[in-house]
Length: 107
View (cartoon, rainbow, N blue to C red):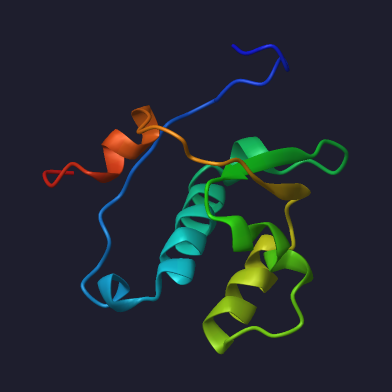
């Protein structure tokens, strides 16, 4: 745990499908959030509690308020609208444990 009292609740990973490998970086990063929220939905849905998603991809922090979305992004925004969360940018300085999960080929 760090000084802010925040700590990760889970580290998870999944392999991209062949079509997803062709997504732009922004969409790949966003897909990670979409997948995680859907996967952990039962623990994250709450009418009163909100949570924070930390990302090292700067432009994702404005995703939910963006007026210009592709069809894919609009579908994702609609599915994410059921959650009470914010996306916060945290610069990625050094490789960390979650990054190690994304670099494994055998998952």
